[in-house]
Amino acid sequence: MSYCKVYFTFVKTSPHLLLPNKFKKIGWFIFIPSTIFGIILCINDFRAAWIWVRVFAIANDGTDSNILYFGSRLSNVTDTVVGVPFIIGALLVSFSKEKNEDEFIAEIRLSSLLWAVWVNYILLLVSFLLVYGSPFIEVMVYNMFTTLLIFIVRFNYLLYRNRKTVPDEK
Amino acid sequence: MKNNIRVERAIKGMTQEDLSVKVSVSRQTINAIESNKYIPSTVLALKIAKVFKKPVEEIFILEKND
Image 1 (tube, rainbow over the protein chains, first blue to last red):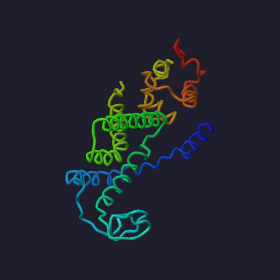
Image 2: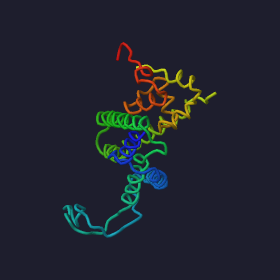
Image 3: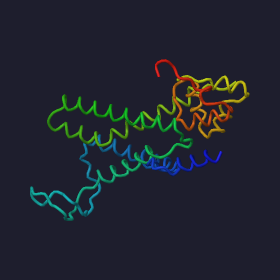
Image 4: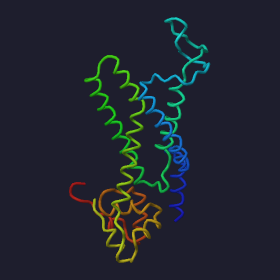
């Protein structure tokens, strides 16, 4: 029995790079609104310029066509204000432990991640072959977020399917 | 690899839930193992065998293509 205890302490503290379960809920609260704002930005062709702030940047547009390195300048941060919460929310949703996290769920998680990377790069490959010119920039924008999105959808679908297929016991 | 957890459970009169609590996993995991959708880790296999007080080979059996 003490052997089991040692194992479980190990599992709890082992470097699985997963966050505690409570972060999942926080993640959804950040992820859903930022996804909605992200969709609004997409509809606006990313030309929305609602929020301007003076920011420090490693690289930014300079006054003329030069690039400004390591300087601060008034910038449109609308994309940042939507993109940063989206990424943080998606990471929290993706990489927080489930309530009943165990080795089977860990396997579903890993296989979903693998699946997401495959699907993402197949889609990117198809876009590379079929999208040219400035529309390709949009492909690049979407591609920044699709791996996590596909993973979240796939992982939660598999969890749902597994929960559903467990028959009620007699 | 196949297993006869379902049979062993029936002998002991245990539900999937009972077994899952004893080995600290979810019921889905026990169900996935029983329906051969998931191969448990060595640790989990040993723990399941311990619950049934049998050697692990009596519960988990290798198949030809393993």
